[in-house]
Length: 377
Image (tube, rainbow, N blue to C red; front, top):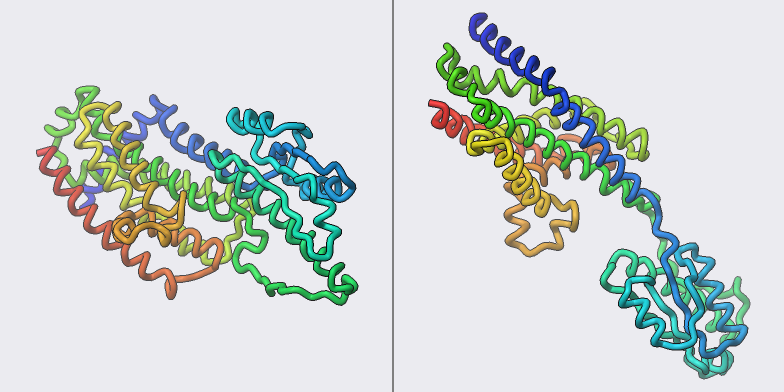
């Protein structure tokens, strides 16, 4: 047993010496993921503001001006210009210069003051950019809803304090401010950890093969398992350091809470590291060069990205894709990360995802070891 551990340690020491000469690789793995996490978190933690808006006011009354001022007071819009023809708006929309445009008809104030009037405005949105368009639509709907309540109060002859419309009793759990950063940052943490481990592991054997040292390694008195463990230790160590660093960034830089057990999260992150390590080693054996390994990691990572629920909730996807997502380890790990960080859940809730992660790890690890042993023999 001691001889086996000596061999494994010698192989790991060889990998650490190689990393010291190619120091840019672990630095890039650790700092690259942390930097992207910072950029994604910074971009998503800021509220949507300063959306360019054009207004075509045919009415030019005090009522229409009040409506425009209400739009400006939302803090969502940045008034680009007050235009005088629809052609200017159409050109600006085609060029992507504005996110929204509001057209106020000539009879706006008269319809507003009439007891039976139905004041309307036309809203044009730049649907090519759906996120700003959705934010603009919600802001405009909020202003019109508030104005509609005021019209109703005036027509009913009520005082503002006497009018009580339908108001839902709202209480948000786990993300009280509905910050997008609390959703995207933990997901980005899991994906960056996957890319880091996959790429680092995928370069291990492909680098040896490209440098011509793989044959020398195979003729040495090492078993396949000893070679795999020896080359995996640095990957696991760098990956775990990267995870701890990114976890600190999500908590201290973006205010993502850690409501659950930190020790449980670290243990499950280690399990996830082993699963992604198995995938990376299989890619490493398949690839003939480091360039091929990088492309394969990119392909596998992007495929996993589509099934994790990062870009869109898995529940809203077709049933077939929901089934496929269950065999993607990153999908279960992202659920675990969000559950522990945001909800404070434990094994009593997360056990299906943990069990799925362990089963997938055993299957991928067993297949990977068999594939590696066959390729290295």
